[in-house]
Image 1 (cartoon, rainbow, N blue to C red):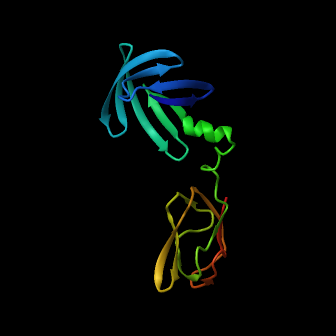
Image 2: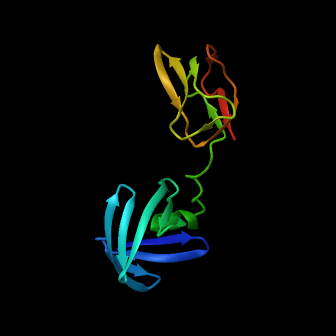
Image 3: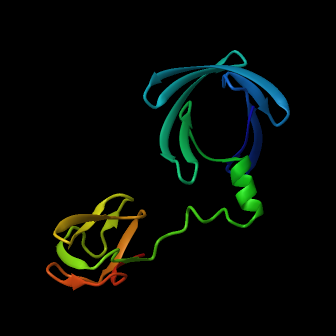
Length: 169
């Protein structure tokens, strides 16, 4: 069984799912359901002879946060497994979601291009700049979602390792 805690609004649910995911226990009450995937993010769920249309609106895998729509009503779900609970008990549960404030040069090199502007919103993995080091072009990508607060370098400028490149809000 997969043991999970599901948080939605002010409610907490203890969920145990069987390996086949078609049955389990929610808050010590057994359940069975049939789930049929309709499209990539749309599902038809039948539970207790009632039909539900479930749409997955967005997923943040790092934070295990899901936004879903069930029969037109939107819900935010946070899911934690036994490892998340252990990290929480050790006070280490906020390590993944910590925001990056400063981005520093990973190596000395020459700034070939800056792809963002101050005040621009970026997503994790977006290209921020291209840094030439040892005759190789290195694409420096955003380590986080955020807004570029200040850019401390310019195109054509040489940077040293650990030199501040930019700040995030």
